[in-house]
Image (cartoon, rainbow, N blue to C red; front, side, top):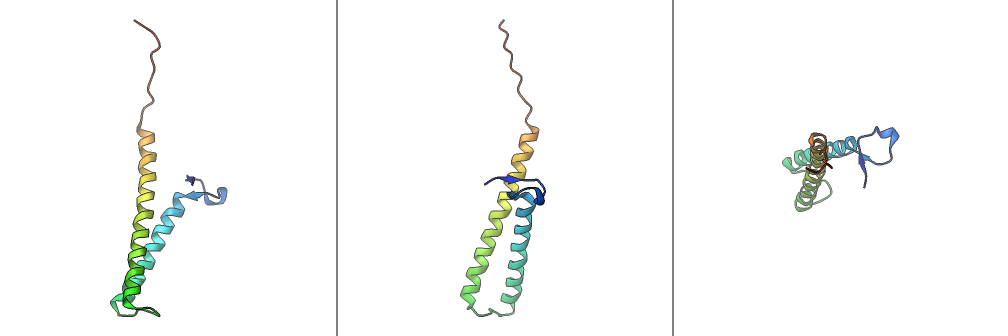
Amino acid sequence: MNVTNDPQEQTAGITKEDLAIASYALAEVFNSFLAAYGEDDYGDGTKEQMETSMDKIRTTFVKFDALLNFINNAEDAGEEQPQEETNDSED
């Protein structure tokens, strides 16, 4: 998988923006489930099914968020590392 920060229109790969949007969307879905759960509205499922779904959504959100943070930290670390100079001369 190639993650890039190129504009969406210029790449078929996953962008950091894609990951951020996916993370945000998962958070919004979780929040809507949480609101329904608080009102004892489980839709067509049971309370246990809703709890399982909420756990899966939360876990997926954490994974997307961790991936995005890892990519950002790796890019920051790459920018901060000075290039080493080599000294080929002998004393």
